Length: 176
Image (spheres, rainbow, N blue to C red):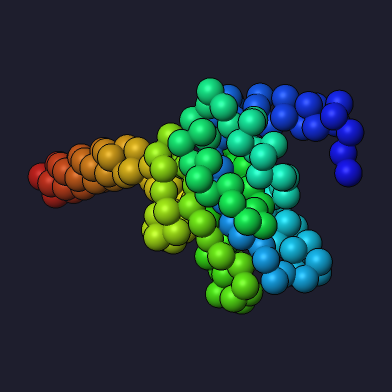
């Protein structure tokens, strides 16, 4: 049992996190063993996401006057909250993959980049490329025109060299 001071500290902590507008996903963990829950936490940690189990009443109080207040109806039953400060698609992939392996894990929904999503929304987000993959694709798109320009300039340079070589051969034949 937490003391009142500890509860107030938890509420302040989560309220500050929620005001920073992270993406939050809510799952029901009922039926998971401690080992399964720890494995899920470890996978989420690698994806840059923290999985926290906090009393629903404390979550509701912490969510007041934040974007997270829009999903407070999800804070019902044995609830775990995943707070994604960077890449929500990586966390969604972990949840979707884990839900396949752990049938007792139930995705409830969440709020991602300010948009309220349900279970199907989290599944859709999991199919998106990760932030790193998107950046790599963008860099590739930026590099393609430069690469094409470089290829064109090299090709023009080669044509000029062939033309100069042909002129040189013609002059040598005329001198002989």
